[in-house]
Length: 132
Image 1: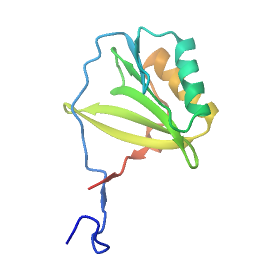
Image 2 (image 1 turned 120 degrees about the vertical axis):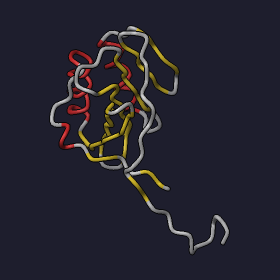
Image 3 (image 1 turned 180 degrees about the horizontal axis):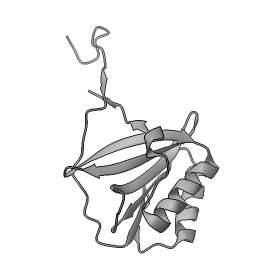
Image 4 (image 1 turned 90 degrees about the horizontal axis):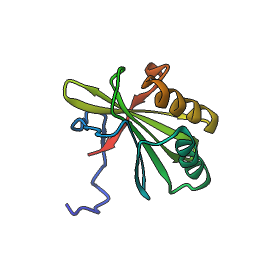
């Protein structure tokens, strides 16, 4: 059966983990334009505005000092709004969870994470599905 055969079915799994990340700066802001280190809240807001204005943009905020097992928060547009994903570190691995939210809720998530490394209502996030 070839790779593009109509008989091949794609399946998904949520049982995927990644290695943990060591962050050498207090804050790192990443996008397809590169990385900025030791960013201000204004720089994070500017990055979020780019995400809201361009469906091809993404933004990742990584913190060096985490107290709630969340290493990074990332966002991009999707059909239903903004998808926000959390990189949760547990047992020397990182798993991704996500939820769809409004632009305002996305800003609030990033702002709280930036200031405290905390994200409210993590139980509302669902594991990210990956094609296998």
